[in-house]
Image (cartoon, rainbow, N blue to C red; front, side):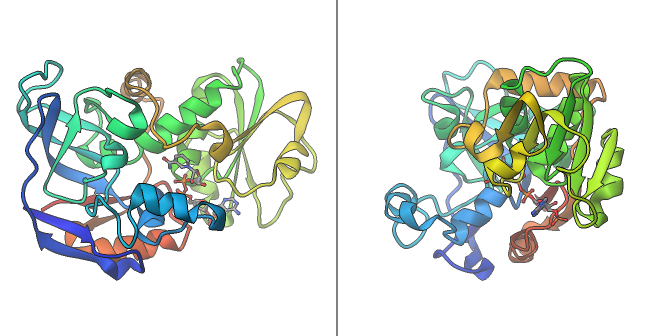
Amino acid sequence: MRAAVCTAYGPPDVLQLRDVERPVPGDDEVLIRVCATTAHRGDVRIRSFDVPRGQRLMARLVLGFTRPKNPILGMELAGVVEGVGRDVTLFKKGDEVFGFTGWGLGAYAEYACVREKPRRSIAKDGMLAMRPANMSLQEAAAGVATGGATALRVLRKANIKRGQKVLVYGASGSVGTYAVQLAQSFGAEVTGVCSTANVELVRSLGADHVIDYTEQDFAEGESYDVVFDAVGKLTSSRGREALKKNGVYLNVNKDSGSGGGGSPDDLAFLTDLIELGKIRAVIDRCYPLEQIVEAHRYVEQGHKKGHVVVSMA
Ligand SMILES: NC(=O)c1ccc[n+]([C@@H]2O[C@H](COP(=O)([O-])OP(=O)(O)OC[C@H]3O[C@@H](n4cnc5c(N)ncnc54)[C@H](OP(=O)(O)O)[C@@H]3O)[C@@H](O)[C@H]2O)c1
């Protein structure tokens, strides 16, 4: 099968298309013919070995010394079940599924295997669910199981009540676009903070108010019951400047737990909201697998709107 292989840590062109062995599903695994994956920020960070200085040795032990141990990146996917291991009961050949691959990665390929349900943890084993009825496979691959599940997990910590004022800082990224829609679905009055180019997008996601951070300081004026830094760019003290007394400050990197993901129940919850029309995936660009290098180059600039999908032929 064709796959984009990460041949070393480095710039986007370390990703090279190769013919590799098709994976064989284990007893509790599902073999998926991948239709769409993404150039996820996490894939870009692994490929470029973008790791804080103090964590580099540990990261090499976990990820691989000179290149990723799992050289086929790709942490989210949507596709069609091609075959199942003998213990699999939740999925069958022909089902259209989407999900998070976990640390095994592997979605930058024509076929990938994912456990039907996590055995150790979501981070290690990933998670799968049936494609929402009203989403294409491209849309289903676009962050529902990663940014969406992360936004849900973090926002739940604030136990948002109807009518509360929630500010989402970094409202145009993967986590941010889902956070705006989720907070809205919980009944909050939502303010999204983004740059000028993304104001209309964030408004279209249902934000009641949008602050263009290039023109206005979000901490001046209104104060909020919840401030969620969904892009991880604020210091805690800066984020708290906009909080009401007893308000809740959330940071995507500190409050999401390690390794991304969520739980299969979270995917079911998100699927319900999608099918009710309360949440949608934002797709900025779509590249064929043959242009994975260009897709990574674009995402690396740090300004994608929602998601960059990579489609198989
Ligand atoms: N995505 C996940 O599944 C996941 C899971 C766990 C943790 N995280 C963490 O969550 C953070 C966000 O990840 P992501 O995947 O959502 O990122 P992303 O999609 O790559 O974020 C890109 C967006 O961030 C906006 N942005 C960049 N700098 C900004 C700033 N200073 N202020 C406000 N907005 C800014 C960009 O718009 P402008 O450039 O126009 O402002 C762009 O739309 C990362 O730290 C990541 O490690 C992500």
